[in-house]
Length: 126
Image 1: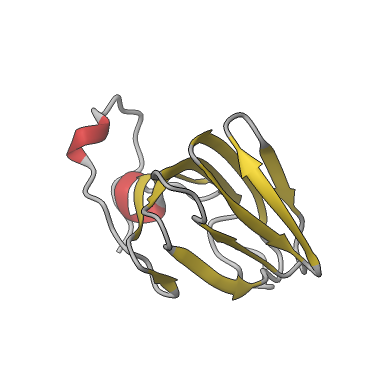
Image 2 (image 1 turned 90 degrees about the horizontal axis):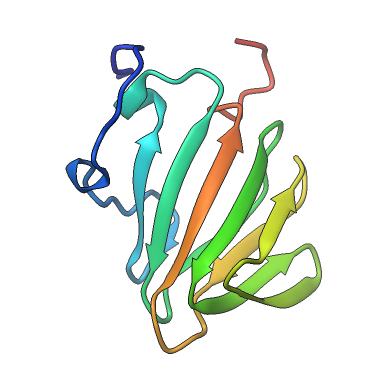
């Protein structure tokens, strides 16, 4: 269910951590700007914290674009057949149709921002 769509300033602590479907082992996210929390129609903005060994399974999006921005820790990013170590300040861009996954292969929490647009992966326009 979508939240009311209005401007806000919200302390990050008010948004609960969630483990979304197909995320495993302590792969947690706070949906900061999301249809359910902000009524957003074009942007899904999350901060994620993956505990060591946590991951999201390989997947791809039909129409969504994503940007990951690593804030802390290190992990392994799979993009197609390529595997890259990602660390603080790395930025990852994922266009639609590209298989990807991210794993915390480090010793500390992997913390990153994720921006996804549009908010749904439906091929029909909203």
